[in-house]
Length: 612
Image (cartoon, rainbow, N blue to C red; front, side):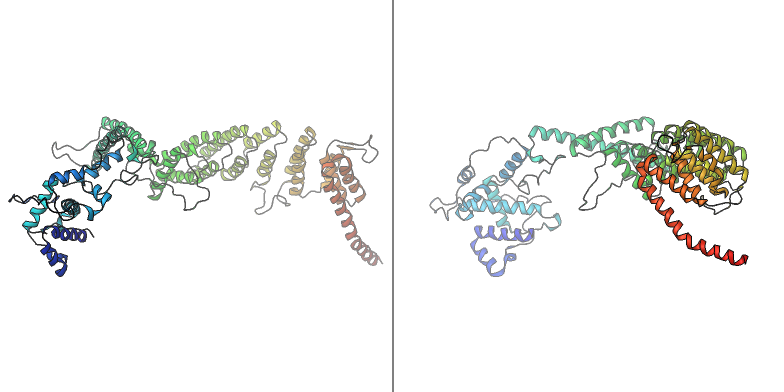
């Protein structure tokens, strides 16, 4: 495209210098005006041809349309516009420079090319020719015109004081100088402000060069390079490392000031200089793009990079700790940390000791306990054959669990881990484990989690528990003395807080597991109920749970009248808030009696026939 424009301007210029040549161009095409090896070009500009005879001055009698003007007339044409004022912005200065390198452009835009004097037309074409030629690649610059045409061009250049080199494009807002970190046009800067920005860019470039040299030296040190001058191995000193840290801090400040680039502690760290971070990219058209804090976003970008390369190193371990401090619920970071622990052979007790502090600071965090689970699974094979080491580790874990449960006694994640730990470490016969649970129940008899853990500890012991038996299923292997012990324990706690449901439910579970009927504790339940149905003033119920238990016991014994009385009094007085539930139980009781009546009659008839 540029070559075509250049050929067109050459043809147009030759037409002003030699009409005959122009006619030949029309007949033979624009290439006919080109003369190889007669129009010398340097790598950057058109070179001045040898000085020849001065061209004759144009005649003054010619009309404006056809008469050439002298240089004085040309200068007058260029000065028709008023002298521009001093520029106040960078864009204004650039625009003025552009106009000075194209002195005939303003007149052409005002009057049009056809209305200019012939000499001014030649000057405008000459300007265009020069600027287009300078844009061509050096390999494409060959001789285009003969000596005579070359002299005409340079006569015009000298006579009009044209500037051979100039700005390629007309400066425009935003496109020429770009924008700053706030999206403002740099061209709108004052010259003083732009100069200050320029000085900062120079300073940043100098720091970047020095930093690049430092990184190259670090790489040479890793590879064991030898300095060609001194013959010694290249060694990066502590002083150079400290200088690089200062240098990177300055670079971070300049980048933020110039471009708004946010660089954190990792970008400034020498340790991470070989890692190219992978930033997070929200999908196009995301409905709710997340704005992450700068420090967190930077750390995650480095995490993605090292995870992509599957790097396991101490610095990766420190990176996970840095991210966990900001977001302890990031399960991917925890998994990657575990992988680093196992790959590097880090001491599991040391990691658990660090983990304890994190857990105490984040009580409701689930990922912490899953990480602890993985650590114990990995550590257990190393101590399973050493009873003393196993007992010591179990004690350490129990002591920490007691400490964290004292902060949150019903933390589901902790209790879930504790139940798993008992099975993993074989703590079924551990008296200290049972005592610690009894202590927690003594401190809070309503702690359902402690009651549940006691049930698991007692009735899941492989010593007398049938594999595969459900918690609510009878197990013949459970010793009777164990069942009696646990029933008495639950009854003792029920006396302390009769309205506490936990010991009543525990006692039911123990009876089911031991295969004993509820009627075996009927006398205990009746201790909490006196004169039921004998009047509002006489009736006394110390525990609604006891009354509920008695209703089930009477139903088992097929004493539906007493069972219905218990349920009705619960609905009418002692537990009105769940009145609908108790009424439903009464209906179920009636339906059960109706459904069983025919069967009982058949059974009685069969018994009678057998007797006969």
